[in-house]
Length: 213
Image 1 (cartoon, rainbow, N blue to C red):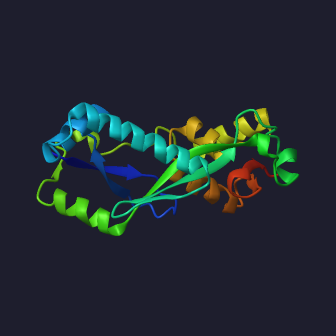
Image 2 (image 1 turned 90 degrees about the horizontal axis):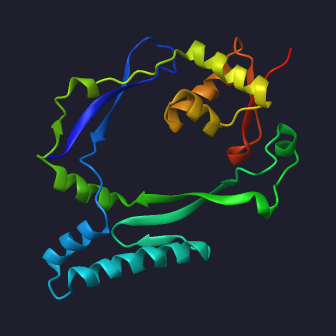
């Protein structure tokens, strides 16, 4: 039975009102063997072993096609594409970010993005209709950040003073916020004149540094 819960998120707008979002409670992870077994119920002409081999070949083919520079679209489902970023061994100083386009040695694939087509989302929604139930576990209702925004400002400044700058990924690890919430919070810090943090660079090149008087 699929379950969902309500999670409290940071109030970045300073309204004083509690902000929430609804999330699915994972029932666990399934792998290739499970998918092959489920597919075998619909396609009896192929064995579970053959279906597992087809899934593995399909996954590898998508990877190879993405590596050739294509976006992979599955009709009726969605599209796969690559996200690029700087590798962990790059010259990640603020001065390096200001120098412009990095060379190819410093670029790596950081994520494979999947964008579902709306008709696929609607199909999953129809399958979930009448089956979604709220999780009765009270511990899942709220998960507040263990630090306040003011405390996180100080954590960020301490990190910047030690390393020269902080990236979004660093701030996520430092605060345990989600990537989306961490990004919004850093942007809010940059707009707040009382917070001595500003940004440099764009997109994957963006870093946050201490603003000097």
